[in-house]
Length: 120
Image 1 (spheres, helix red, strand yellow):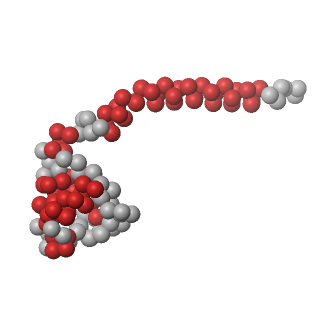
Image 2 (tube, helix red, strand yellow):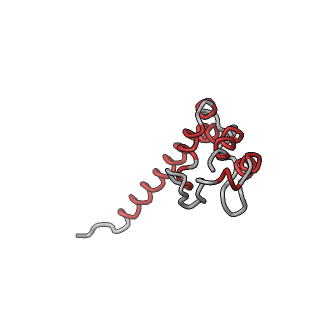
Image 3 (cartoon, helix red, strand yellow):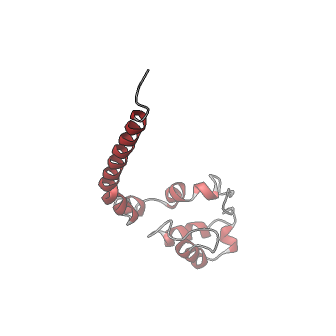
């Protein structure tokens, strides 16, 4: 019954330090992949060939809904009667203050703006 009470704390400390080193090296190994994704490295060709509906499914459905009804973002059912294609393209490129972030459909703004302008 005279066990040393410090041993469990030392084991936990050693395990924690080992886990920190493992996660650090794992993060360093993924740094190149993360940098490539943030630059749009792997997905540019796939998104460039996608139709506006496919781009919508990938980038917009979370905020604007599966039926364009709006969820946390506004409804897009009549966006073409509210904005011109140029205004829609500007919103897609630059975003809106306190609302939509810009650059979600990078490289496809014009195609998406024309498609959205047809929704009246």
